[in-house]
Image: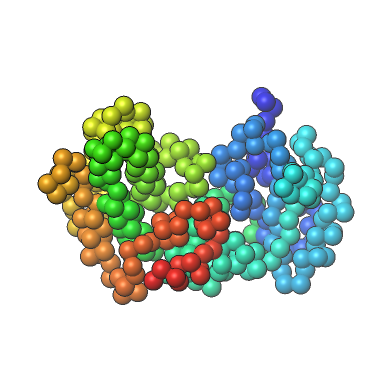
Length: 339
């Protein structure tokens, strides 16, 4: 376990020492982007138990994929850095860790569009946070075709008005359920209260990441990504406290601490007019909430793009769909169905 080498480090060396020499004279791009915990930097020794080894994604010009693939695959050594250069699992057949593709088709497969041609509002809404994180994380080893840097720059973060919209929709999600922990407990549904608390904690974590210009990864890595945010310790303590609390009033107290903290961050961003950040009763009921819709309305009032202003407040695919298949890639048809 102590000899584990992070996948990004392993793959960087693999490209420089093995793959690059095999591509001598071939104009190409090379990177470790796309799927894989090592792309996001969350890999550990546990990751190496399947589908693991040195990986490089090589991009070439039109019509060159098969030729370059054969040129590289036939000359790969059996091992590099103590790992086989061809590997698989019970789900994936054994294949070399060097994949060769044209960037355009590869991007359309992963995202549903080629970001080099511009990213539309509908593109942003249909691309999952996980896929956006995968394409903007990792590392570019070589950009000989001049396309990887441009594509990654286009996807680095949302345009300002789209960012406002995504944050607004995350506040809407919170507003829909912020009274539920208390209401469920009031009717004796302790399990429902816990479940609602967990959903709010997840949404607050995602909101915090979005406020800090980070694409929230899928659930396995959400907590790890949240912990990497500078200054998140106190908020994390409040969220953990809400999950550990033994009754709904204690859960609510911890959630209120978290609400006030994220409200303060929202106001410091300067994306909208400041919103008073204290908690308040939910109508005449004995449940304290932040009133998430107030923040959503302030954000949308600051949007100038008429296309964005006309969107329903349901957000991106991650914000209105929860199935793994729905958010695994582009969900354009799903987005179009909820206009």
